Amino acid sequence: MKSLFTLIILTLFAALASPPAHAQENPFKVTALTPSTNSVSTNSTATVTTPAIQVRGSEGIGFVAKFKLGAADTNNVVFKYDVSADGTTWTTTQPYSSGNIPANGTNSVVQFFTFTPTTSPPLRNVKYIRLGTVQNANTATNAALTIESIWSTSYNR
Image (cartoon, rainbow, N blue to C red; front, side, top):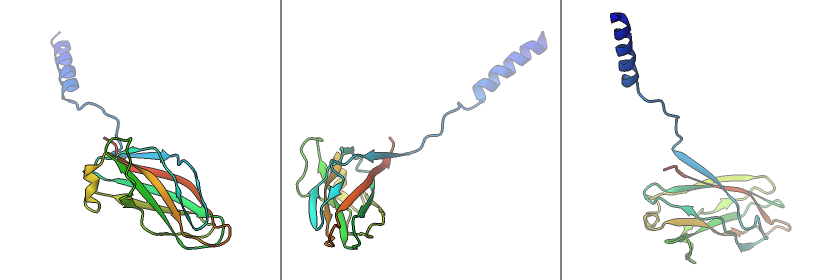
């Protein structure tokens, strides 16, 4: 009887002393964005919007864009982003940009760029961001740009 009592006490103690089991969590969230159009004509700027992404200004946000041209050319492509305080009214000045990304003809280009509170301090003062326009500076015949995919990356909190 004494051993059964000891066994019960030890089992209860072991159950209370062991840490709870939790699934491992990934701190990053990757979201595939669907652009309003996936084509930008040769040597032009097109309105290309994506769904809004909520910004946590103290942590920043990243974007991955994958694109290619319909012809051999290597001029720059620029992705510009609108911001909003309420998710309804969007800026027209597009304060955030990918910067110049050289095209690589008909080969896909995958570019990662980030906006952080350190490199983009106004990011702390907005709540939403979305793709607004894409500039295609390529001038070769049939050098229209095709957006193959675009993702956002952020902390999953």
